[in-house]
Image 1 (cartoon, helix red, strand yellow):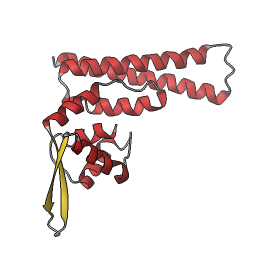
Image 2: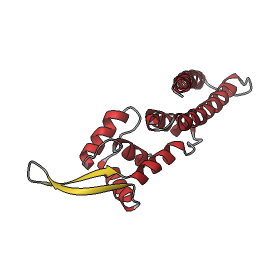
Image 3: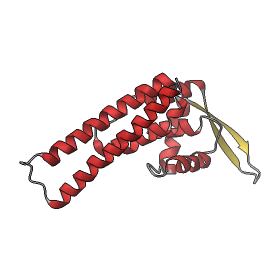
Image 4: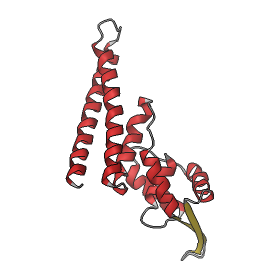
Length: 174
């Protein structure tokens, strides 16, 4: 997911590593918070694969700084990352889906429709699974488990409603 975040923030302009981290926090802090220790190898890997480039420039303070920018193949890779399947692990699903939905503006209408459909399908599957466990009279759930499962069903319902709104808006823009 860190590659997607980096490529997305470098979509419009170049940044230093500090600028990349700051922009990621600005856009995605409610979902993730990558450290410099995670950013540095990701930036190196993306550059080695030709998805970003870097240049060295002297800052106003007289310090040599590296500036990163996305390449054309980096944009294609970003698009690929947005459209690849999400984890079927519910623990990772919501935060990763929210990140992908936050980046959907770079996709064309057809690709956005694919992304929305995939995320909505998984969300429905997770919601149904939680609802089935909650409603199964043979499942021996304690009070806390029932409350949390009920909240999970509601959370997925709200998330699906958001996606349906995004689908309608995308349909108007096609």
